Image (cartoon, rainbow, N blue to C red; front, side):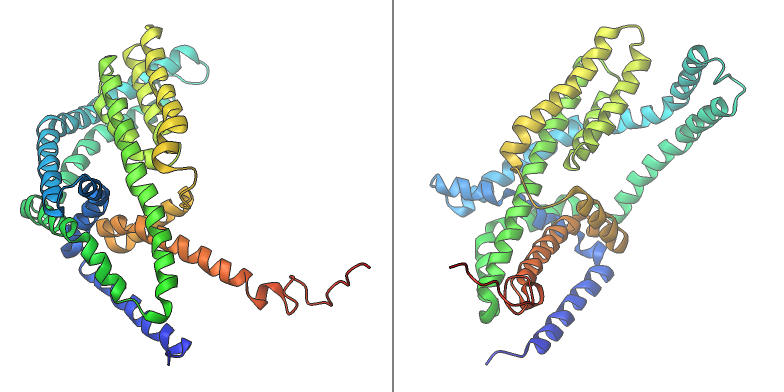
Length: 363
């Protein structure tokens, strides 16, 4: 005989509380395992595809590991140093950009803004502050990240965890399925499939979209000669997972830099604008429909809320689990709403949404 509902709620509530406490207390220690699990989840479809081609799981995992390692080394050696250098340089030239903006506004709107006005002084002060604090903030963030996440964790534990999980992913899922409570196994499988569909669409689909657009923006902006094009492309690609935010932030940053760098050379300014317009057309009409789908059930506002809440509670680990938790909670909310709409609480005693007598059929 199944346990009463109240007892089931109590036990599952205790389990959820334990998981919450463990995440809160051991977040930093669990970070490499969450990173490894995220990498394995992302690459599992690739391993499945290689298996369909006739490779064993071990060989498929080995090929993926070698390809990922080579890609990581190339990116680390060629892209990361340039990205860091351009970011620091961008912070350093901010005062001159703010000064140029003040001069431009003074020339165009002399009655609204002059060099002794509060707004002009505020722009210069803001630029100076960003120059002084921005570089320090970036350098301290890099140094603190290196102190919190040591080299051994990044380059040894995470890849090892990812490889082992990728190798045993199917067996692990089967084992978890065998541990599901028998009375609720069909429902839990259905909810897990919905969560996986949402995550697959968002993490794999949007991750690929972000990578493609970030690479496109960075290469295109560097080809037209825009300074800090790599940084702009990185920012725009990173924020693409939030609809329109990546294009707005990256576009504003790129066009602003283009105005200062190419002022008077309208062809190059138009080229920068055209790059972002073409990127948005490709994203909206090709990339997102093909790689993500029309609907993933994960609203941008819900995603931002999850990132804020879990990031505040659990730090960087919380931000890693925010997307899966948001997807899971979204599926659970839709499941509860479905149950509510099929219940007497919603439909009434007559099952038609009304507590009154059923209408009589016409003769």
